[in-house]
Length: 145
Image 1 (cartoon, helix red, strand yellow):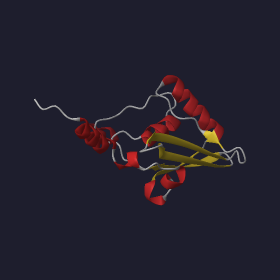
Image 2 (image 1 turned 60 degrees about the vertical axis):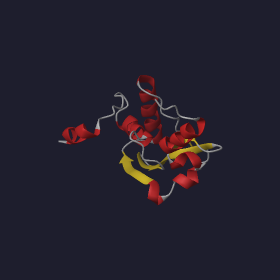
Image 3 (image 1 turned 135 degrees about the vertical axis):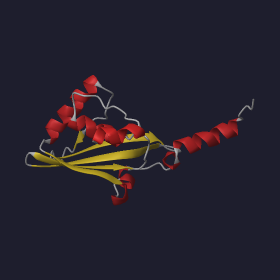
Image 4 (image 1 turned 90 degrees about the vertical axis):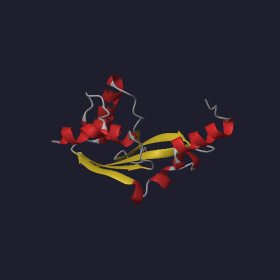
């Protein structure tokens, strides 16, 4: 039986964590067209979306707080973080822009993990009373039919 030394464990950890763990990414790094993953319009105000997220947090796993822009209440942002090489890195950015009673949501994600934090955030807005369920890849096609 082979025992891993500290260096091998470190290398394996880096491979598992992926490249984003070394980046120390900011919101502006992630908020780029190449990382745009979701664009969706809701017939909800930012306040209603915030209430949906709050309801979801009470029933299910925590979603980070929606931060409303103090200088413009029609704009908000939600971010998720991961540990970078020397600092915390932003890995998900969700921008909210309200016009009237509708809100445009743009979700950016730097990484493509098996379970995306962005997916659970969008789920929480759409389904505040139902917890996000991870569906095995081989069953996803069945659910869509």
